[in-house]
Amino acid sequence: MAVGCDGCGTQGVPLAKVSLGRDFFGGVYDRLTPALDTAPAWYCPACSQVKRMQVDFRLIRNAWRDQRGGAPSPLDDPAACRHALDRLCDIAARLDRTGPRADTLLGAGEVAALVKEMNGIAGC
Image 1 (cartoon, rainbow, N blue to C red):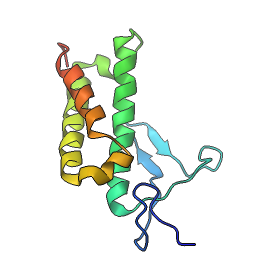
Image 2: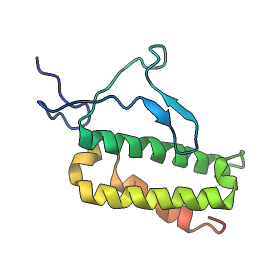
Image 3: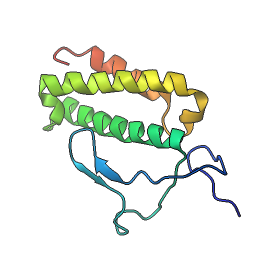
Image 4: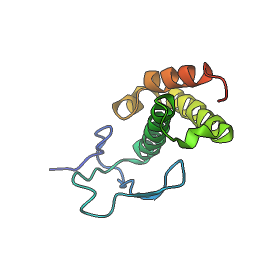
């Protein structure tokens, strides 16, 4: 049985595991530790880029929810909030270029909705 990309299903291409690095807010992103990665996934180069955007989107969305709920958030700093909004706009533009293939990992509508919400709040 051939193994394909967990994002789009493409077979016969090099696959990579998005596993190490720093997340959007500078925290360590580690999916190599077996105890932390109970369902390893492998991605083609195009889906690897979208997966990284998905990770950033989720971190920003969660920080935004924390801030809106009154909890401490990295977005309490207006510069960090502006940087996050810029990253979301970059993600939206890249998803527009990637097309429907990316929708299996991150929907452009989700990103657009968060951009609109964050744009509507003063201080960000």
